[in-house]
Length: 640
Image 1 (cartoon, one colour):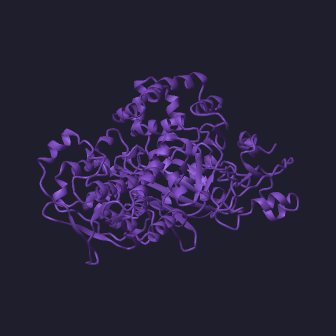
Image 2 (cartoon, one colour):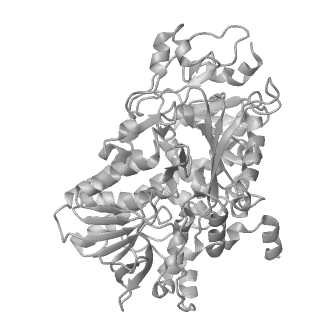
Image 3 (cartoon, one colour):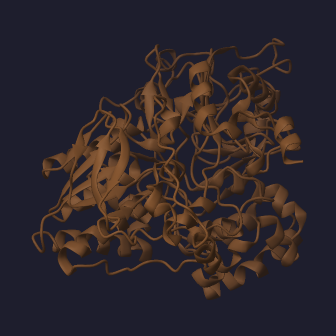
């Protein structure tokens, strides 16, 4: 057997990966020996078309290793049967049921990310007139994407859709775009740290319900944990299954590492599983991440049969997800306006919003106002009257976590799996070969690897502030890690001593991404309802059970729409305000009003999004978030 086959042999045992045994031959030449397979592997005419390919030819001696070709799977059968899905479905129906009841409201929503667009979608379903104001020329916020000078898409992040995203799954169904989700086989794939180039996986057997399928997937894996270590993992999770959300919420004061020490969990569980999981969930190392985040995810995965099954969107997020939301809103009388930058919230004497003053000088008046801005932007835009109120003062305890998303284009097709991979690297979180996993980016000849670089700052547990590093320094560090993941294809270990050539790269830095879920933050996340009579909050950082995620963003926008709709029908929100920590109330009593800093920058980072940095972006970031551009060694000196 060819030496390189060793690293894919455990994946090749199942029909879960469609494979091309002739990596140096195009699919056109493959058609001569297997025309049906070649035809099936070609990209469908429509973006929503399914790619089905199966090459069963066994490689002969001396041929290069197997290559994966895209294959999609049907929508998981149990997704729409979970309690969380049905609750999301009921809330969606509520908006339709209340349509025509109460006064129709003109609602201005500041922010065109997923949360703002979801809010607008559901307000339009309830018969209101939403107007989304997006400061940039692209929608999506933290899921935004744009084309570079070569016409290649640059994405803010590597985004995966889980079966345990009930409101997101409802949204896809309501917009009739479920066929845009490319579901992958139900498994988790991990790179083997101690065996460069090898992978292992947790395989979920079809037909076995939760939580047995999760437990069996772990037990069947013989590579990562011993049987004794697996058994030691179970007892601490039993209270979660019995007590549910109350137990999960109570662990927010503990980091993952502290939780493990409290319950006597072996260190290898952290090394083998939790490090990968923590960085994938919130871009943070286990020493810094709240255990509530991990337990929230595990609770969904243990209780929902298809909760951990993953899907890729079949193309770029603005066109394939955001635009259908825009079309839905505008078809019902709403608006989505681009390049609309808010200068300040102008208030009435009672603290309610009088109007929005735009940077253009325009005044925009509405019945209701919703902020769907990221928490760090909201803090800079906070009106001085609000800043001394306990409700708004508490969000000073929240901040976005830095993260970096990297795109690497190579001159050849690399060994890959048609799935998300957990790198288990000190610098990298998860990665995927988008030229295989995503239809729009599909390429049979060359790979485009998209990777999440995390942790990339001290707040996330990193030892280096990578946001302050140059793009080239980040790419160089990434390539060293990739030599470990692809030892026979990248670097000196490849047969020719050189390996795959990097054609180009794009490094997208998001200095303030999802809120940093460090211990003790959940109690400061505010409700969507606020003390201001005509102002509501959205955004994944507001209080909702799916934390900082695409699902959390959609749910928060949906809950914000519910607040506005309930006020229109019943005269007040039916949910009320979330309790505020007593210490926050006491501290707020000592505050003096301060003028808001505002958000006057031109780059995407000024709006809480990501960008490929140049000198201008770095200079701009230094003006409103200088800590991001300080080298780690300087930060240590300052802290002393």
